[in-house]
Image (cartoon, rainbow, N blue to C red; front, side, top):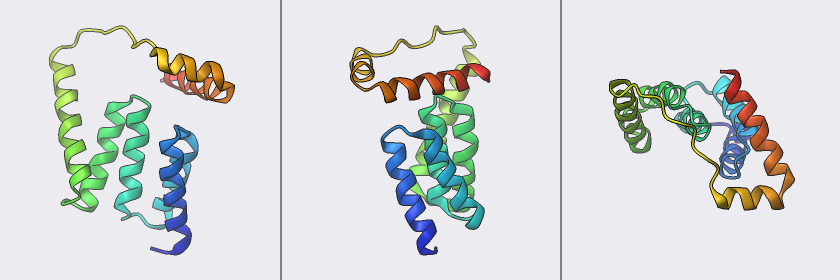
Length: 129
């Protein structure tokens, strides 16, 4: 791993922690473009998809991480859990109403307009798919 990619990966992890999913995803993809076998970046992309609520994409991405390193415990656990979730949803194909915004999120968004704007952008992207 070269130092530039290592720094990008660290920055992507921080961005993911703060919910800046688009920026984190971009950095993880840049790392993977240079180092296709970087398991942490592949796993990071799965976490981005999971944060967006896209379990199917998260599952596809975490399978890549497990393929790169079959003994990466975090990826193995996430792959197993996502496969269970997807199987349960397919078996019980009832439509559920979208989850409401939690009161704690509403308060945070009210205090910080940039967070509200970011959430609105994420919701627009989700509605396009």
